[in-house]
Image 1 (cartoon, rainbow, N blue to C red):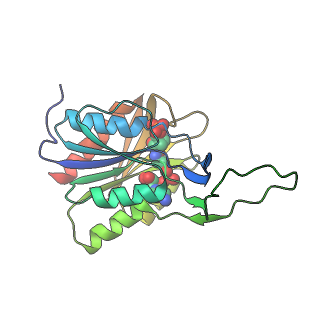
Image 2 (image 1 turned 30 degrees about the vertical axis):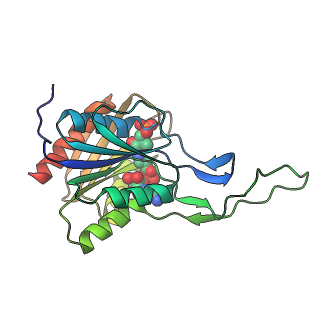
Image 3 (image 1 turned 90 degrees about the vertical axis):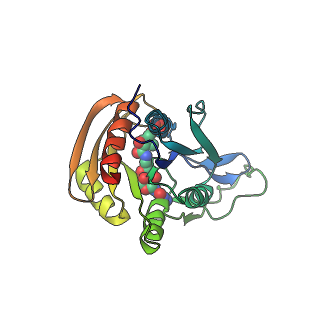
Length: 222
Ligand code: PMT
């Protein structure tokens, strides 16, 4: 069993992928399975933390020892994260969040009409991670905030730019595309720190990456 080095710490983790309704039966979504976020929840609970897992459309068994809050869309995820982050020592955004949603969800199922299909008009979703950082800083909260980045190319350069833009403390940059990261059992990442550090985590089970992330979070909290 793991050393209880997160005992007395409260952590909030988002997992899965948001779904943005087009009509009552269709949505815009992504391929996140929730496995990386659930691995973060399991490992944190095993290390003694009080864990809240905010799950967006995940069909995995609840991790032992975690409280699970279920959400669907990015707006619901944003509301749940703002509510749950109060009093947390660390917040980790591993969910894959839709950057855009349809302006409106049709009240009834969109039918084929024979004419050209109507375009789906999109509006930008809130940036949840950047919002958590902004409200932490304006309220002077002591909280470590970790983001993820799903990048297909120029992984480190894009990761550094994203870290600066989002303002979080750590950014876990995993390469996606070509069957990597989304839905897999293994992951591999570089964890970038706002202080300029970079920790390489080689390919291994998602629990291993989760444990390395908690090591870095714990170092910041101590
Ligand atoms: O669930 P799995 O199948 O195990 O796959 C894991 C994963 C690949 C989904 C995960 O490891 C991962 O990379 N998650 C982040 C995916 C993502 O949305 O990356 P991004 O580069 O688009 O976003 C960067 C960060 O901002 C993320 O922390 C994201 O949660 C956050 N974000 C993004 C958009 C938005 N509107 N609000 C946000 O908070």
